[in-house]
Image: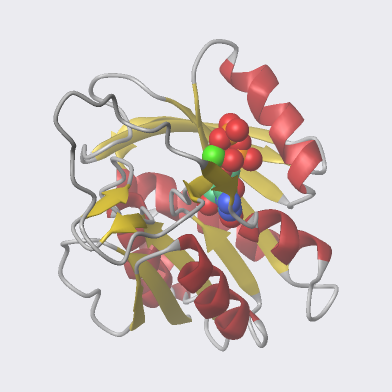
Length: 224
Ligand code: CTP
Ligand code: CA
């Protein structure tokens, strides 16, 4: 890449990126959460700004500096993320869901702190499904040319799981990475394969999250 990147191939485009991990409250002091740092989503936002895009970053529970030049919308729960992403997506050319969205939330929120009782085992925690934002974005596009991309952290047969997920979600691109010690969660580096609904598969070698972000935008830009 390098010099060609100043070509600002996303100029005049509005892109939406989600980042971080949602938290689903259980009581005033507790939540169900996950280990997403938000670094990959922030790298996507920074690189999109550098390529000339107007960027809306929907950030869930991150502790990272705001990317210069991006509009940052802060959310906590999956429901709040859905609202913010759908709103921003209405006039977007592309949406990239890099956030780790909680699949389930506690069925009941306790207004007061849940207390333990002497000699009693805890009641089982009842969970309900959260909406699938990526599937909804893919199914209800505001215009047919909108590009929708997701991320998937997988174990076991990473590629087979990724291909099945891409088909199920009906998005255009799915960035699949294997979860491991140094990779993905919290680290500065990532390694992935970008799967396209058109069957194209782009391996991205282990390297900075910015480098992966740039390849994602290359793939998005070609579809715009
Ligand atoms: N995603 C979403 N809404 C959800 C769950 C996931 O928008 N409720 C998005 C994520 O942001 C990500 C993609 O879907 O871009 C894949 O997330 P993942 O958790 O891998 O997919 P799931 O369908 O939840 O499958 P799994 O059962 O493997 O968790
Ligand atoms: Ca999930």
